[in-house]
Amino acid sequence: MTIVIQSRVEDPDRVEWRREQIVRAAVRCFARDGYHCTTIKDIADTAGFSSGLIYSYVKDKEDVLFLVFRLIFETYQREIARRLEGITDPLQRFCTAVRAYCEAVDSNLGATVVGYHESGSLRPALLEAVQKMELETNRLISEPVQACIAAGHFRAVNVDLLTFRVVFLAHGWALKHWHFARIVSLEGYIEEGLNLFLNALLTPAGRRHWQRRA
Image 1 (cartoon, rainbow, N blue to C red):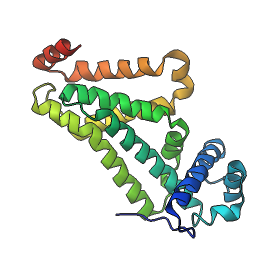
Image 2: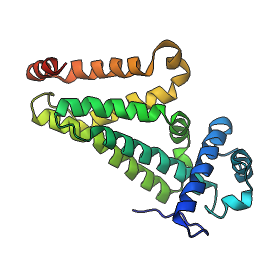
Image 3: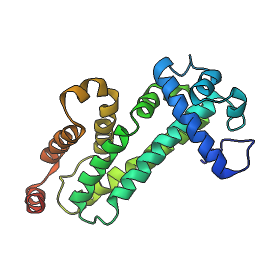
């Protein structure tokens, strides 16, 4: 399902530019006051323009929330895919994907937290579209996992469950950033999580392969 957010402005570059401004302001408002307590006027004031201008680019506040989700998943997909370019070794692809996901979350802390708290505020059609974007993003993790299993590097596991555990590792950095940032660096957080996954997943052959590449 493709969701099209209607705009009264026809210039696609201008729409993209303005919507990014709106989304960035909305994330600040939603993170501070919550989705339900935030008004379009609050978003407009934070962005530095009028409520009327916002209504030129979206129909309502729910459209804005959906655009927040779309920004989140487009960022994840772009950054993870970019980091995986040219990497063919399955184990290296897995580790790179995990690192890239965590780093993408780190660059979008506020939006990630808003996404967790407010997904239930979307109407069914928009929520279904967000869930589809999430599953598309998860393939950037699940495909390296499947490749590692096929190569004999990982023991056989439920790929969906493992994928979601990796996602939870990445999102956990945002959800508990207020605590983790005081006790560990992002790099340390990622390496700790990766070591836990690898120690649980590597076969003897996979461990030898990894040690040769280390």
